[in-house]
Image (cartoon, rainbow, N blue to C red; front, side):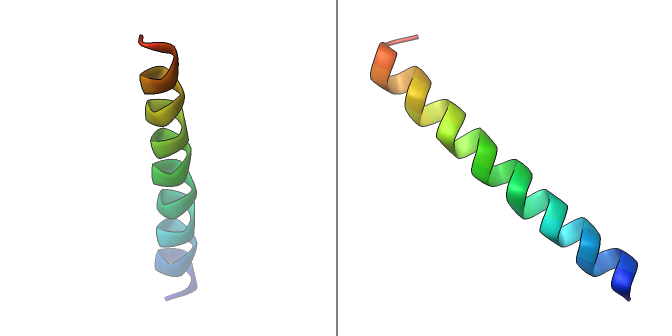
Length: 30
C-alpha cells in the first residue's frame, strides 16, 4: 500500500513538472 502511494506521489510530481515545461515552451513559442 505504501509503495503504491509513493508511486502516485512521484507521478503527481512528474505531471506537475511536465505542465510547467509545457507552459514555458508555450511562453517562449517553442
